[in-house]
Length: 546
Image (tube, one colour):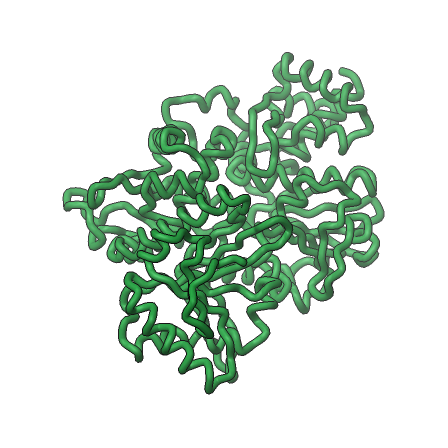
């Protein structure tokens, strides 16, 4: 066996599921040589491959050692096959773990490729239960922890991981990858007080950025630095966590053995296409969404929605129920588990909150017969739930036609903001949060769709949390810009009353909340970006985003 082939087998024992470009960046060989030898190794049965793509990673083929490859590597290194299985992430258990997290695994490999450009080949260690997802060890002895904040992972779970990281191994530094700007700012607060320096980047930037791309930010300050500057700023000494090896390590089964009628759950991240993954995420964010609204959020035609949802239903990831004359989609328990494993979240907690499985399979479909507490509440208040979906769908459609784009939409459980006021913890609990981009300007907004706030006292209570929130610096700290607050009523009369109450409440407090108030009839007539919105300082209507 040639030296390059031995080297590639050793790399795949450390970097299972890496693709050709990533393997080339870690090795001393050219991309062309790596391409050729990987093909030879696959033809001889020492490695196998699968296709993978996500919103952040273009379609590629990822490689794994077969049982024969593990045996050949053990022979080359002069050790037993059991030793390779024990000390490298190549066992069946490791294979399933990494495949469940394949999207974030791919991003971390791209990040490792950038590290390799600067520091030479780093060593990589994957973790199952440690706070980081992985860690790099550089040639000079420094170590870097890497954490991915999954899209569905809540702030509490991530804060627990941060606390465990603070109390654990003394790394030289840490890199935190987050899905959006809101969680970037939340992460900044979470990593303050770490015993080593931490840097944060958006996951999409880390997946596509080079070693010199200025995408990394520290816990404080506005400076944006490159990965080379990050590595220059981490401390010179460091260790990394060592997990106890599993007592039982089984050789991996061939991927061809996993092509039955029902794919294993852990194979789905490799089998699903990016559009199917986006559909799952949207249905997970907005349970009981109908096909029209889902198509508007995806930006695709109704026929394409039918194709996507049919494929996901066939894989038992989505459930469609006909309620009040419309097919409405919700994640199945299998779909909930898929997203929870991907984001290192609790499967049990996800099902307890969001499961649409019936308590009694023989009873009629209804909100009383659902296992998930939050899913039950959304179905119980279906008129309100559908109104929120309709607002966001129409806004997304009209924004695209006007040359704008809604780049972020968060459901209520991620739209909530917690803050301190008068030494007490308070919160706002909007129906949605979003960010609309026009050219280079981004405008965040909260949405409150009101059906029950029709009495003056109720309207005042609805407004009070926003008065407290906007009296602090938190709106700017949380979003980088002052968010608008959209308040929509069913009829114009209720909107008029709310504007009067808002003026009365804001004047004595001296706090100005950037309220924009409208009603469903005006929005249908003028459009969601049209002159359908009124502010508290005047009665004339104008556009939402000037």
